[in-house]
Length: 213
Image (cartoon, rainbow, N blue to C red):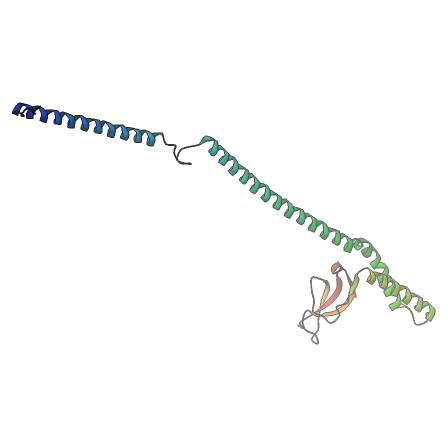
């Protein structure tokens, strides 16, 4: 059967159909693109944020508790160090006080004993020539025993004859002009002084020289 020839009307209808098909395809493609863009945007909006990008009350509370515990620990360490230092200071002071008490516990007893020593020394000095040797030897031995006992417990005498006057350990009873000695020199010792473990128990009573008028 022979094909009928195309008329201008038929060509126009064919062009309209092609244009319609093209518009429909373009509309479908645009709709698909809009749908894909919408889905992508939805996926982007629905995506969970990275850790720390938003506030987390529980994490912040835990962090605050950690900071508080660290601060409490630092304060506890500081208090422990202070307490240890204070305990060490107290122990050191107690040891010093105990040592001081041990060294100077006999101070009052030594003060009471010194007049006895003075009396024995004075008796030995003033003993008359007629006194028996036995008597003199007895007084001398008694004095020596007394001094040995005092030395055993840390007592030492101060006999500053010829030394410069020292007001820390000497007590000047009088000052006498003496051209043969430098001023403030101990000329004579009227009474010996004594130290107990380096501490003055009794100053030496002395006569001090001064410049001649």
